[in-house]
Image 1 (cartoon, rainbow, N blue to C red):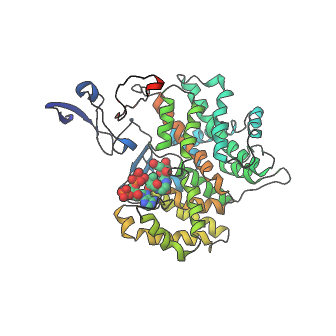
Image 2: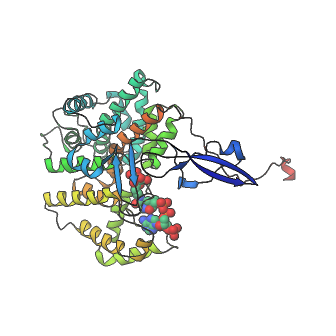
Image 3: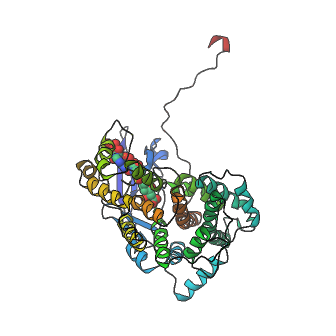
Length: 429
Ligand code: SDX
């Protein structure tokens, strides 16, 4: 196969770089020899045009609004699989057959409890601590408990760490919620499915048996699927960069949780619901759309826009459907916020500014409304996102660690600061 070549001429010198093609999507210019050949760096703040790695896990086509996990369209996975099947797919590259599926469900169920000492970490937080602060601390603290399987060069250790993280995040997130309420922690129930067990640990109490509503369980399970992975987004790139130093998987996932917390990223669902509450009424939507278009106003419509999707976020469409299902099941068809969100979506996507900037609802736009309807507090929305994204982070981390070409990530810079100068005595400065 002929190799495509990119040619660069700088200071009268012409150098060539190979162009690499993937199985689908944009080609890349392999510039690994650029500095050696030209003494210059590329400059790409925010990595708008940079591929940081090779991957086989998730593919996004922003123009077509396409999202594939290991080649399977998100629409089919959301309809035909459950979250643990999706976890198996992201980790192993293929959907499980019946026996593999049964065994994987069993393995994960055996890891759902946390060490009793870990529960002490919660006592150090104020009851009103933001759940994301608790998750960063507690997930990072897991690395103090699993010295038996933290050799990142050992495939078995990587696999058991992945299982432990997928299994324990629901327990840890539910404990953060209970701690904030002042209610007792609920132990996992292995007779329930992964997501039904999470709802049991969230909303159950020792006083009575809690039986989760299957329609709501299915809706939350689908929300987990939609959030499971998303190529090289900011938090996944953080996990990969942390992992490139050889840091243990628990510390790497804690770094991903910290990055996801930001309102420009996973914190947008919480920010979106707060924005809808602030708008309050459809009559005020125009005022906020106007603010979002005002260059002198830092206000952005939370839940709108995306670095990659310049058409529509396929997850937003599925999330809107899930929203309808949950609100109908709960008799909340006239939910004020949902009606407000649909009005805002209609006005925004018909506005020439949003059309020109290619700004459409993203995964976070409806997820806050459906989670609120499920009884999840706004402050926990990003924690739910982190729970679901843990499988994506750990699958990408495993792929990075086992990539023979991987090196520690160490970007350079365009230095704009002071050039060399001498220190003067203090009385001469
Ligand atoms: C997630 O990367 C991923 O895959 C992330 C994620 C995942 O699954 O991991 O999909 C999850 O993080 C979804 C995004 C959630 N964030 C929000 O909803 C916050 C609001 N959105 C914006 O902050 C913004 O759209 C970003 C951060 C999502 C994307 O930012 P970019 O790609 O850097 O684009 P930009 O900020 O340069 O915007 C381009 C233009 C700008 O105007 P100009 O400078 O060209 O004049 O569009 C404007 C922006 O001002 N713009 C918005 C806007 N988003 C972008 N204007 C109003 N409201 C908005 N929401």
